[in-house]
Length: 309
Length: 331
Image 1 (cartoon, each protein chain N blue to C red):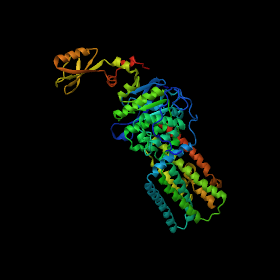
Image 2: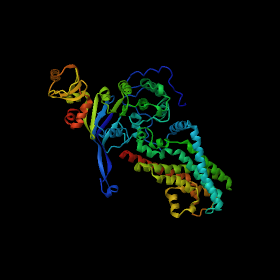
Image 3: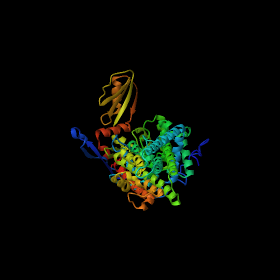
Image 4: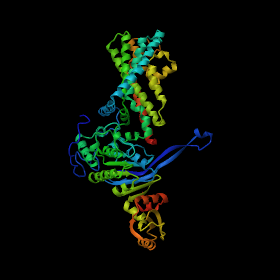
């Protein structure tokens, strides 16, 4: 049923009879019956509701078709320039830490695609600071839907498809440049790495947003881990100092976004000595990290309800 | 329907030192008690006004009733549930209208906002259709259902907000300054809707407003809050009787004259030949005031005004008068 299927035509139907106590379709009795399920909060958002909210935003943005095209193309070109820079880098150096252009491009494409998709999905978390400052987060708390789900569906910008397309193009180019003996497990690891990458970046957006419940102002620190994180995962881990590597393995698990899955797919040896089984663990790590992020979110909401804004 | 028992809310506010070089570094934490023990009960089907000066704690109370804030102390129940502990269940049973912040989607047509809210509140299709038709008719939304919300006038947007809050047929409705900034016609429409749904559907309504006309026309009971405490809880008639010992006689003289000097009465305002004389019933009577005026000037016409609730309430604020509170149903 489209949004416009029901429209009043002609004289409106008469008002329901003023019977207190209500029938099945009227106003409820003064003491309400239980409505709907009684589960307080859910782990996964309600997907039909999410779809409806996203569809409404997309249709509103598509009204400005010219603007959308210009912005999406612009974003594609801007991010593609990054890729060109990478290619030029490899005209100067034959390899980086033993990784060739094709292999590094693979990291770049994988990280870029995962980040691009998460950027498209998580606009709402980026805008949380504004919601808190303007007081519109209060409205979120008066609705019978979890706060996480509402904010997640709150701001989907279709112009961000530009970055996603760029990620797909660069990943496609990289796949054609490297010599890989493709097997079913490798394809599965590639797909699950993209999904896991999206989840890990999403968790970073969520944690960054949760912090604004305390600080109110947006923290640029979040961008260090989101945009900065995308840049980080575009290069092989061995080029980074040990402290940084440890941090991004055990604290913010970005190493699972592109480096470890790439080791498996490209059949490269890992000079860092991490157990090879970890190369397949991206999905598990992503889920655990997301749970941590959800917990931080819940703490943040509780803080907001205690202190107002 | 709504029960509040010794409800409290404190905020920790960080104050800077007023001067000195350390003022940017050292900050004192001060606890401000915005709500300091508010107790009241609202039964099903009642419509009550919740008034108080700015900063009295009205918005904070509403936020605690609707699940936005957690109380620091006391107990609150809405439709038998705790808004802080059972937020989702309470949300299904309440409608909330914030006068200054719309809940509609800015870029979408009004109709689409309603449709999205139908999804959010899981309203069955048939019930939604009937209810929406009813509200569209009452509030005359038909002409701008397809208009994006950002293009609506304030009055239209407020009618849309009110409709949006009622789509899921909540038994309890909270309104925080719904008529702010509206013209007379728009206010009348909203008042009519509120009166209708309260009378015909038994919706319990808690109305916060600065417009005393709303209260006088809609509510039979009023709570006055000041400095975080309820200073009056009772009917409008009671407060008028107990506190309404001031009246005003408005005299139209034959020609303009300097402010009249009448014993026991003060001229509060003049406008050409018209003068407003305020007096206390305990000190003199209307008849005496009128005779004094007629003796000193040529009187053409006169009216006697009862005190508006606004003046009474202002008097309570200004005088910090507790004798009214003890007369009403004070908890």
